[in-house]
Image (tube, rainbow, N blue to C red):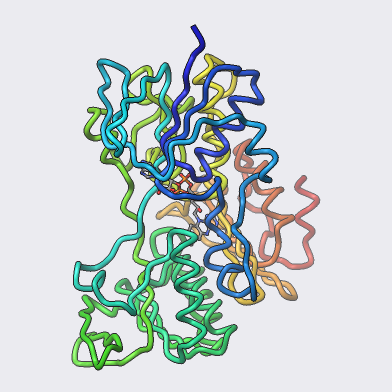
Length: 398
Ligand SMILES: Cc1cc2nc3c(=O)[nH]c(=O)nc-3n(C[C@H](O)[C@H](O)[C@H](O)COP(=O)(O)OP(=O)(O)OC[C@H]3O[C@@H](n4cnc5c(N)ncnc54)[C@H](O)[C@@H]3O)c2cc1C
């Protein structure tokens, strides 16, 4: 009997898993259950090119020919509603039952909102899907004043894209620093400076915000202050789509708990991408590279190939104004941050007390990020190295 692999989620992790299954020679059936109507696409351009280009196209993960060659049986737009784990069967929103030999959950996440009243206001937006990007782009084109709620990566990218289009932008961040969860305070301050230099008004420690309405326009209330905007975009993080995993009784802790092969606590169910917890760090990592590379490993494991586990350091990038920012690793709270600035680029190295690199944040210097990956992988001791000296060539540390 031919085997059937079922993937829930038509995003980046789902796409790479389907492609990997075929590349590894799987000839059985690949079913993809996806609640969006599009072929697999990437989300990073949604806060960048999709808002800025005159006529942006769906940022496809693969060409239409590549997708066709995968020979996928699509169930879309449809939702997977439940897993009957004992019968290895998925129940779809149409009521259809879909049996699987192996199941991959690649359900990603959805944008969080402060409250249901925010959801109801027609000029309040979130940005997670292609449809969201199209709606937001239309709104930006007829707006002058934009509020961005949330000073994380997506909020800051939207702020930068809106400034490039000449909007007045105000960012409200509840914490005292921007991107506080993912970088150390020195980097947060650099981000603040960049946005202020580009004319964004940033309110950190904005506290709990409320929403009001003034003749159809959204009003943000922060403490005693009221401000009227043409539109509000909320970027306060992601709610992982964990319902199926929860209902199937899978172990969950900061995401679906998986081993380095993407295996969950149920031997026939795998998880990949945003919804899966990083196997060795035990944290949720929402990034393009994790969604791609961890899902490739999980797809191979679905076919029984356990030759290479996933243990990459987290890596993500962000484009804001003319800055390409790359973030490798996570900052050690007890670490020391060393700053190296040269013309047009800046590097923020966070070293552990033992002199190992725990995080590098690189502004406009992708070459050093490549090098730093090797330092991290080999646990290179960097204590005593004159990292901050712009005259010292980092390439000598190759
Ligand atoms: C605006 C934006 C900008 C970003 N920019 C960057 C960046 O610059 N750099 C970077 O590294 N990362 C970036 N990211 C993060 C990156 O895009 C995500 O980490 C990545 O998309 C995760 O892929 P995924 O396949 O796990 O989840 P998703 O891409 O969310 O795909 C999951 C899919 O599953 C569907 N689904 C969920 N539940 C069900 C169900 N029950 N039945 C059927 N379908 C279901 C969802 O609707 C969705 O289509 C960005 C994300 C966003 C939203």
